[in-house]
Image (cartoon, rainbow, N blue to C red; front, side, top):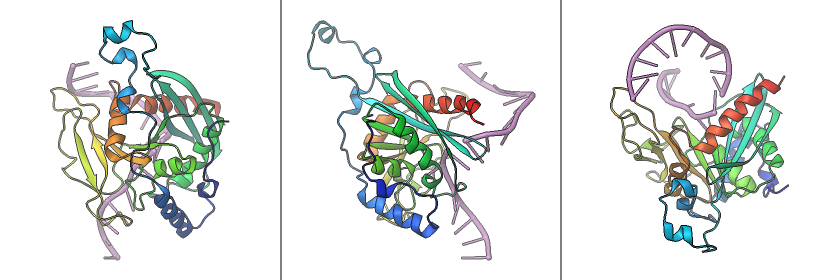
Length: 270
DNA sequence: GCGACAG
DNA sequence: ATCTTGTCGC
């Protein structure tokens, strides 16, 4: 048991009234830190094999090069009213651990209150995890949320672990450039707070649309990922982390693996 | 009242 | 998220 419920009082309780859920989210947003507070630098995420080889470094031994950070991906799958949460932890592109947990969902999906539907299963999965990840990639929004307390923020603050939100669609906020256009791989479009984000001044950059993958020529295109800070990371670093963990697919590797692991776990759920 | 809304 | 065949493109 490595991960600790640092803030047990903030655990998403699905029996709360909607007003109470929203109040809890405001508390969470107050404790959330959308600034870098990491034990690593995003550039050190890639495995040695992915980085340009430096024979000087290769020849030296014990030159202080630390192990790459542990990056965890979390994703859920559903079977009827059961939520299956899967966590896969990678270090330098290698899977180090993976766990899953199944929990009954108590409420339906409600935009803005996702953590109260999926949070229980996610925390149950984290309780199974033996490794303490350096950062967690959560499927969904972080700061890009009506009260700046999306799923990634809720999980990050509750466990006090650096967290990043990785979503496929925009929940709220305004892109600085239309997301209807086709952007090249690597493009980042800032998402700023508008009136729908009631807890912070308009214009604040609360995340980015990140084009992690794009087709070369044709009249076919891939939608960007929506990346936002969850806890203890800035908006730009959140995008850097997703960039560093992406490997040929739209989704970052930890998220992709958690996605398929959760999907496969559906078979062993009744 | 209308519109908009992660997974 | 989930239900699903075919289809387009590299």
